[in-house]
Length: 298
Image (cartoon, one colour):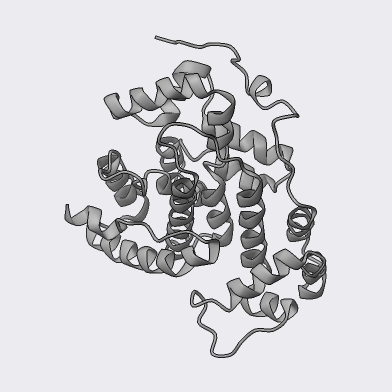
């Protein structure tokens, strides 16, 4: 039974005063990423114009995640070695990380949300590469940003989300389904609206908007494999929870998407755990206390 309450539309919730603005440097990089006629020199300009971002990019490229044998000293060299998509997505992460609020909401922990987002992004990209999906870096960005609207929703609708969080714990259901019943929309719709307001690429917006629709995406077959990778990532366990509520749904969808069994999944999880441990310190995040691989043993 629907328990919809006011405000019932996302436009009511996400009015202009609520939405944070992305840094200019991130917007400029995203605009460049949509053009095929630009190279490292053009991408370097907005990064070099933002000293904070430039320092973060050089730290990112010189991290153990890439493992270059010598120190990379310039932004252009970083772009040449790592690629403009990887650098742009890293800049986008930094931008979103810096503007999303940290609501005072019960047990909610913003760092746990970013831990989840990072692990899901690494999983989606790795799975996409395994399946030879074009532009696997886009899958990284789509999975990274899929839950970015949740802190804003908690901040704007604290009483309603208190009820949803309690019901999720009692009923073991996905947050998106409970949101749909209460509001007529879910946090995927909210994140897609936020991405649209920020003029993010349409490919990212579609990946974000569809991340709760794993069944429909699997039914579409080959054309939707990239989106299915992002949606599958959303079923991974949260770093803040000891149990994995959606494990059966995840395993069934994984086997259907890849045509492989849990042995292949165990190998994939081991790689994702290692990459997450390498990547997390760059974003000043702790590595997840419980690895993905450990869920398969419990």
